[in-house]
Length: 379
Image 1 (cartoon, helix red, strand yellow):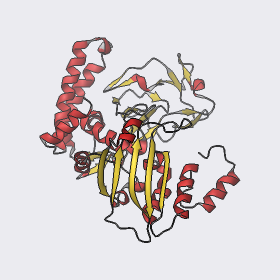
Image 2: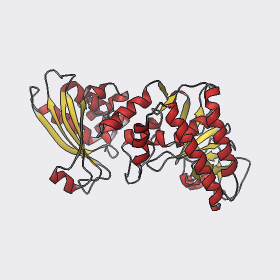
Image 3: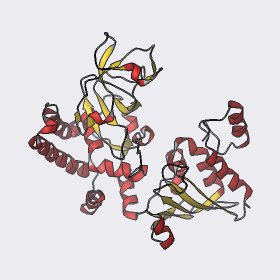
Image 4: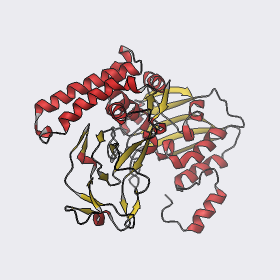
């Protein structure tokens, strides 16, 4: 990465590698850039093994644009493990072919091999689809699909939907200027200390179980997450750690640290309880896991940029009402102090969640076959 570079070195790279060096500099993206520059434009091949962060990362949009402008993607192989000891996370093996003119109808091949042994044996999940699909994504993100039905299902979710970021603004919580321990306390030291969430583990589906901490709400001590977040209106809390969406509706005005995402409403056309129901549903979790490539990743994180692209159906407040009523029934149970120790109450909540899942399937117009794909995903 570019963390240990001087400003002079960063400026040199930005000037000499305008197709790959952007706000956050990644050296491997610059190597990818250089690799494409030195191969012949009339069919030269470029191949590397690299981390998978260039596929979807916000600050890899320049290298993705450069690839799409100059090359045809022969294949991208995703490996859900580190090939090299020095790296953490998933790896990608790619083969690009430089072209004078890129064929917009060119079909790339996306492959997925779960283990090293599968690579040697050619035991891949494989799907071919038009490279031009990437051109139509926000920031030219390289969305990988390995199953035709899953890809079609993602498109169906998006049809007639708006991005959740247009109706809910997600932000990270509070970061201290001098270390998080200095803004956390087990007691209310003054009127600037407010009850808050210090860990994502305090958030369950539809439930907030505070550990009893107070957080200092003082602009002088806060680095970020102060002015841009409305903690004191109704909001959504979302766990940051994990490969699934775990959300709760908060009407208690709790603060939160930056290991939690906070969703504030934009405008008056949507109810946050309706959005909470969608985010906790099996359908939107399937969508999120399919496009985010976070499933089974060590230290998986829910990323705000990805959350903001989730598809929400544009429906009237009246059409949102059945979802809201079920969420209210769930909240009436999860707010009880004994909820986590009471199997009957938990079973009742699961029953309501199943009803919401069915309503969400109907909302997006899914067929029995499509529902089966989602229901089978986590088995």
